[in-house]
Amino acid sequence: MHIDTFRLAKQVSYMIENLTGYWAEDVWNIEQCPIKYSGRMKFKARNMNFAKISNPNIRNEVKFYFSVRLQNKTYRHTSLWDGYYPAVKALAKFISLKYPNSISIIDINKDKFLLEYRTFLASRNLPIVTHGKNAIGNKEYIKASIYINLYNQIYEFFSDYYDNRTEIEKDRWDVRKLPIDFNQTRGEYTISFETVVTPFRKWVKKYLEQRMVIQQNLSFARSRSIIPPLSAFFKFIAVRYPEWDDLSLLSRNDILSFMGHLRTLPLKGNSKNTIEEQMKNRIRVYLYEVQAYVSYIQRLEWVFAPKKPINHLIFPEDFPKKERLKAEDIKYIPDDVWEQILENLSELNAHYVPILLVLEASGFRISDTLLLKKNCLEKKSDGWWLVGDQRKVNYTNHKIPITDDIADVIHAQVKLMDTESSDSNQRDLLFPNIDGRRKSLPISAKVFNDNLNKLTHRCQIRDSSGEIFHIKNHAFRHRYGVNMINNGMNILHLQKLMAHASPEMTLIYAQIHDNTLRASGRKRDLKGL
Image (tube, rainbow, N blue to C red; front, side, top):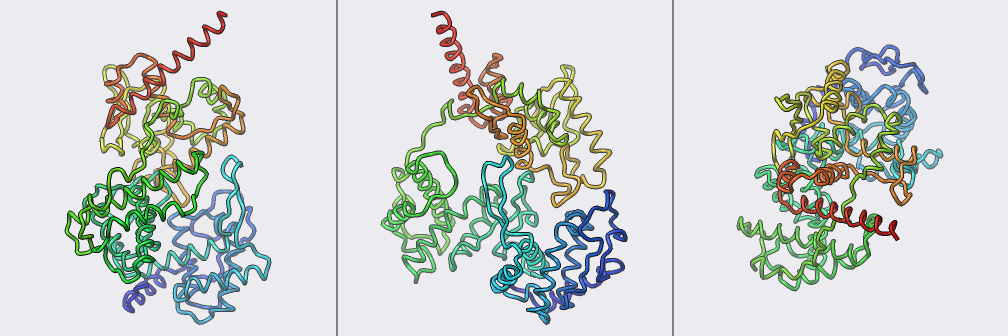
């Protein structure tokens, strides 16, 4: 952590200045909180007692942390007086016991703190991890308990608060602090370089600074996906050549050895593909990122770059062939499933109903749907048009025709947002979060999808084979494309309507249409036998 004395003193002074009145008290009573709670007072505790943190410096930090979260409404009252109440008590006891004189919570080595804190929690039969299930309950996962989670959040908050470096100098970048656009419908905000071994880390940071921040020809999500392949490559190089601090001597043999190394790494995730297919995909993706990286730094003539040209290091035949996309690979929402969804629409949380209807009627990607503005409607002589950006292809103000019924849904949503979110929707979004940690940001694509799949399981929505239908958000876009082809739309018109960069994806919808006709023909033939 690079924190100069002046910066620390200035930030501590600012923190103390803002801990006034209620927020300066060591005991916070929920009924006296300046941020009023409108619900029923059903809490584990009415008073949050920070006096139990004997260390005055860390006590002020914890109070300041919660005051910021409550005042900017990224924490609800239930988060503190209900959810985090036992975690604050445990953290207070531990810090008072082990670190009564530390000048800050980040003055304590994080790994050392967590090791000791886990031992402390275990000795008191308090959980270190919690077990949960996904939205539909068919997969289990393990995550840090609320006790560990609270410490991590406070530590990260003050690590950033006291850090005097620019975002680019840090080893973890927060996209919200960078002058770039990013997909706000996703919950990932950081890109970490901590897995990239030194001394190569600075060169990866420089690469992404150039491409993501300066040139802006790589999206934030795409940049995040680059880290694992480059991290694996540089870790391999560091083990193979511990004396290297650049790639100037990189050879063709090193690339071949790296490809062999990739086959020794364990596979992750729950892919339905065969092990060999997964391995080929990994080699293809990792090798592509290494090739792109080396090619780029050679064009810029960085001193770090390999001396041998990229086409002498990596050959086209090194990349395992990728299977072409087939019609049967596209999972769309068929009519029978859509009808079941409509029949059970009352079972879906009301917040997500207008999103669902607009998504199905527009063919927009989920991120583009969730980023629609309140002024997204345009009335023309031939009816209503939906207007929104298509971020993936960098196409602004894309317009598609919609029915009067969908226009009415959007009008009702605008009216609701004007009533409920006037103080928390500075971006004038059609579908914003009005409170919580994602306040003023669009509703999360994952949260929306989780709620849809809860609906399919709760209401037993099944496909033609009798299986519970698992919904992916993009399946609604595929449904739109298939429906347009089925209704006779020209391929080129559909490509333009869906803002496809190339006709390849559009042609897939025509294949689905042809396959459906053939399947219908076979059924009719069988009935005639």
